[in-house]
Image (spheres, rainbow, N blue to C red):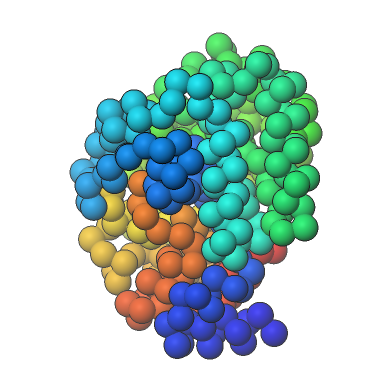
Length: 313
């Protein structure tokens, strides 16, 4: 039933109808997973949006630190941002939400691990009838693994978090140093993810999967440049959680119409479509599906198959 509705909604280019269809958002950062208007209304502030197109992650990080963070009240809580992210997802018809909660938020804006886990669990329970929230531990590559592993191990053991993700400047810090943490996460049944191949090479996508034992790769679009890597990803059933607008606005891809998602899909790589950072890129998962259809990169039926990959993955 939902497939027919989704296909018709795409063909009619009705974003309101697309939003009614269940979908997954498996590449979402809770600290930035909401439209800026929601944040401005909540705190009675005015955060100016970033440039429509940025050179790289450095420019994005500069906007966060120089424009977003200074506007936030000193007493702001990451739980507020998580709440905004969940509300945004529900309005967009997201049925399964893997949302990353950065370790910095937990350390700075909570009274401890137990307090953080309790508050996150309360939100998950409160919305259990509307959306499946799967909290994700988010680690930045700038963090030193040996300095954070005790705290991360406690978060892993808490049972609250369902996955773990590594992000940041992948060209500067390789994933190898985090292998112990990722092994521990695997032992406790967490889905293991990491940003790879957003800016680095196809070879580094495979390297990250092998070193960290990844189940899914966030972005991974560089793999499209190497037939051997794509074949390996397809054979090993590694899912790439792709965010097309993010790739365009960070100057990684020229336009949606030439996004490498097409090449990856045609080579048998399992992909999903996701929002990334809504506050930064001003797009939701539903809008991403419509953009991919509107540019002719995928047919409505292909996009429905991709939608279902996210829901069952």
